[in-house]
Length: 79
Image 1 (cartoon, rainbow, N blue to C red):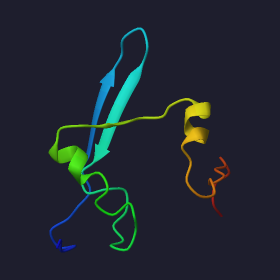
Image 2 (image 1 turned 180 degrees about the vertical axis):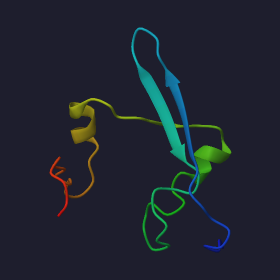
Image 3 (image 1 turned 120 degrees about the horizontal axis):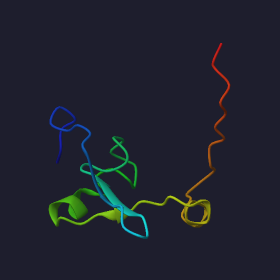
């Protein structure tokens, strides 16, 4: 088991600036700090194996891999 005292966020990315831009990334301990989430520690195995998940940069790729309801971001400042 992992203790939250021993965990922290760490982000690793690899970027190829060649003719076709490509990127891969991994969050060492996963996307979520919530132990009951399916994304808790979901990327740890990738990190341990030196692998990366693809970074989705184009809107069609992002839409094809959404989970749940997307957030709507605005550029309006908060009051």
